[in-house]
Image (cartoon, rainbow, N blue to C red; front, side):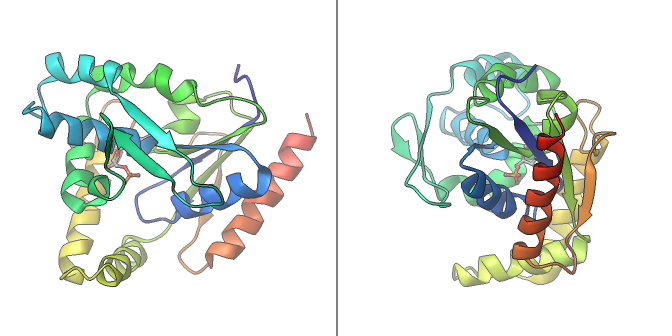
Length: 228
Ligand code: DC
């Protein structure tokens, strides 16, 4: 049983779940777990140490011992992420690391090695856990579960805008192809595939603003946590 009330937010990349999760956590005053960041950090650590992304014998101990610190900067900001005492906050957000994360995340032994670390985030007064398998595997008994999705096309447009704003030279068709390839790998892997938990509320954000989604999720939390 989780130690504190838990809201799981699962869904594909680019659905807006990270932004929504952070805002909801801020509104509730709860902790926030960005589990995707852990897979990204593991992928970056593997690359830095010259470990192949499929080399489970070396990846699993790396996952258990990963020297990571999430330093909150206040508000609903992402905060700073330190890997082996280096600031990797931006370095883990590239498409290359996102794809590498998806590869390391497809391995069950690697996923198991990250379980305890993720569950350790569940502390009072509550936790908002963002990922792909939060409601199905990591926190199966969470009080509230939502699954946030949007069409691949809408997600590609959002990602394209973000990358453009960062000054990167990107192509919408390539971003869409990348999103579809990652979806395919995350949905069809045998371990902890990207699927909504049976008891999750599904929210399609294709034509919703972030503020609307935050509002709806807070309403769901208020109704489901107070019923207990
Ligand atoms: O949410 P994200 O883009 O930061 O996640 C990066 C990759 O990590 C994504 O392709 C799938 C994987 N992931 C996962 O398998 N399980 C999670 N709970 C979170 C992310």
